[in-house]
Figure 1 (cartoon, one colour):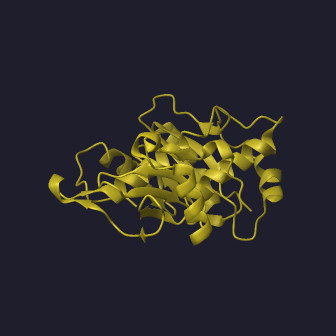
Figure 2 (cartoon, rainbow, N blue to C red; figure 1 turned 120 degrees about the vertical axis):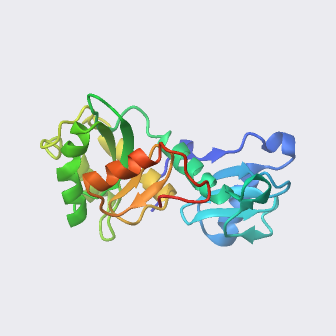
Length: 238
């Protein structure tokens, strides 16, 4: 079942002037491939379009007759990894749809902001949650987003995440409201489906990079401090 709200789908505003209908292209790809398309955008190559899906980025022509999957490099600009940049863009666009109602720990002297996709039931996720106060004390603000576990369903997730006692051990600055909590949670779960989050826990960094699996506070701080330094554009923290 898909929990992604309709308003979260982003289609390129360039389409009218380019003579391509992004909604039609979205529907064509979804019918032919059986994958949900959340983002349609142009690429620097004329006639080639980028599709954001839960299975990763795809490239297609304007009619959806041909599909490519792989890495696009810009050889004219130091082999810039356009696919990696597209994935970063997709994550940042998805997280921009969260809204003001969220679960969040704010650091008093904030140095970094990260997003943690987690399931409250998995063992490594519980370890990560227990260590969040360490990050908070060291200047890292963390917003929490739910991911449905392999055998979980929406009702189970709602029962956990919408329980006001669930996060009593954490110094939260923002919690999900009791009224409308189920709908907000379904919206947030849709974000994890859009981004194809499967490894738990997973972190999305300020630059849009995805870091999968358990990270100790020390490991995560090293990664966060590193992304502020100049980096090879063809590399990724994923």
